[in-house]
Amino acid sequence: MAQKSASRVAMDDIDPQLLRFLRDKVNSFVKWDLVRFFHDNPHAADTAENIARYTGRDVRTITDELAGLVEAGVLERNEFSNQTIYALASDADMRRLINDFVLACDDRQFRVKAIYHVIRGMR
Image: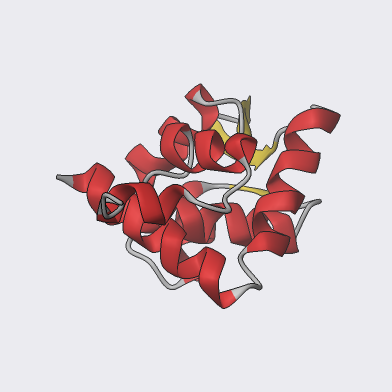
């Protein structure tokens, strides 16, 4: 019997919807941290500067990643008093998918596979 490739093994046991979410929306470790932050703080609505401070990241590092999460429908961006404010998407299906992803991350095997996919996507 042919041996499975490393990439095929890394896809085994991952819910296809979570795999798409990981590949298409949370395709960097910074985005992963941001998704986790907004999941843990679902009512947060703040500037990139404050989000950077709360997450322990540099604002220059997260600005493009926040924009990518807005484009992917994970976050919403609004303008208030000449400031850009980011918040978790209000879409119930997206919030459910985010919750499923974060809960799956509690499983070590899922995290290892997810890390593999993020690194693979960075190439």
